[in-house]
Image (cartoon, rainbow, N blue to C red; front, side, top):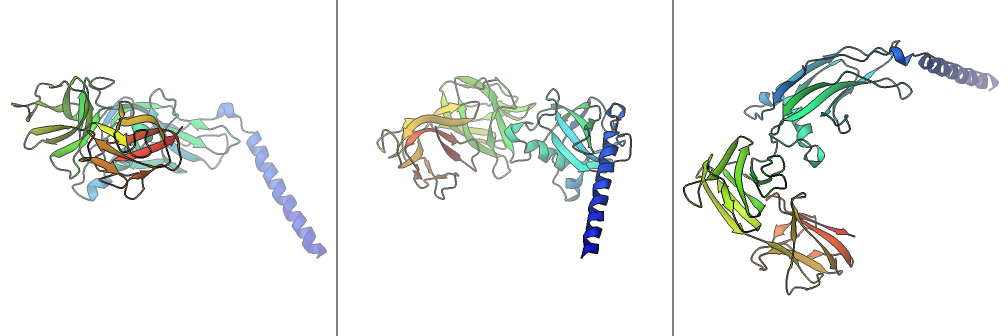
Length: 351
């Protein structure tokens, strides 16, 4: 038993000695002599336009770029992890897209991979079809006890494609930033054909239907027709409109649908609606209102012909769906999101 204890003690001392020696090695590192990696594969001010190609399985494996870099030099041989970071110029890499996070010093990035990361970033950080001025660098890490080193950032430009359903962007003077493609409300082609539909909030304005920033439909020969490069549509009555467009038949139709909240939980009960207000920044309806612990629904034009409820209590709405329960009485901010015709949603936020 004593022998076993002695062996155990010797092992502990040996491990401690090795750990101490490794710590000493790290303390001997002179960070002033570190050499950062040098990135190759993208040149300054290079421009990329990402293209969606689903013609074959092989096309989905198309390489966007091949990157390589020299090893970082920390003054001695250390296991190093390299991470590629991409972010908008001027953001100081506060919200980077990242790749690799491994010891290799090269990587091939697919078009689908970079586009998916850009498209799915929160708050629509990279609007599709809009050129983004970005920069790329390599992050080299060996230990939390040793300073991280970064390669020199290289600026370039990249335009992501729209990875969702095909859209028409309704640009015009009704927008907080007039004619801004990136922040425009959109119509969707749910069947991915020439038919687009959805809710758009319009003011007294002029507008167009943009496929891309450079391709747009305007007025056609009559009020129900559209034409490529036609004159701006003109609109005079503010409100929410259900708009349906057929780009093949070159037609457009608009139906007024202004929305309100109604129900036993609202101050006026089931007798009348309380109108919702549209928030252009959020692209949602909203209202701050006192509610009791009861039920609500949403309906258009003060009429039950078009109403929305929540049959599965999952936050996704259905036309004619079930009444929506309010769990407890209080002051709420209620949101109604009609921006995507395949997924109308709502939110009740207790203040």
